[in-house]
View 1 (cartoon, rainbow, N blue to C red):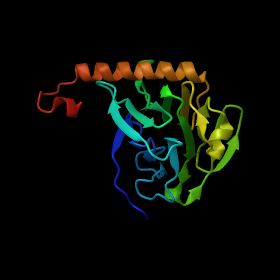
View 2 (view 1 turned 180 degrees about the horizontal axis):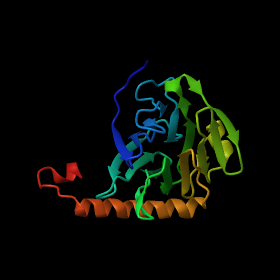
View 3 (view 1 turned 30 degrees about the vertical axis):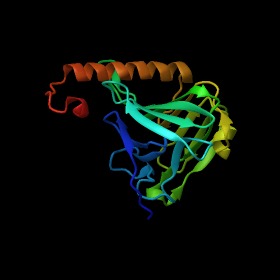
View 4 (view 1 turned 120 degrees about the vertical axis):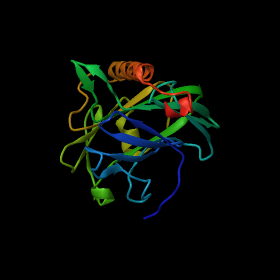
Length: 222
């Protein structure tokens, strides 16, 4: 195995967690349980760890990563010679029907901020700790990855050919990528992603407000 050290941010909703590198690559994510095999695991193995990234086409770029204030919503900004963009990553969690909604769903929102950035999306989940390459089935607005107990599905408004071929394209409007395990996203993509983002931000704001946290390194604890 090839091992490296990366700067990363963490997202989660108490059903799963993901580690996101400052280059937007998902370094670690296990589904369907915390003790399951990774579906993305380049933190351990670059060759067999799969990939889920939204990198710039330009080889040289600057990056910054931060959380939206008082939330577990992670933002990664990429500044490349042809433009700047932001990837917002989160795991939905909010109150619904007298319980917490915390699906095996990972949402990525990609926004152009300046210029005309060219980006390249790669999504190659793996099984059995990198030993199993999943087959792919293309549909109208999603790609199904098959070979595990349940289907992994990527639903996106990015043309699927760009994703399947990992081809560069100009990011000139907001794009969404919703990755699910088992139950897929059946609702409208853009409005549902924005609604889940708002509800997740609200959940974390209420959690921080109602949690007893001392003043010692309070920001880091939050």
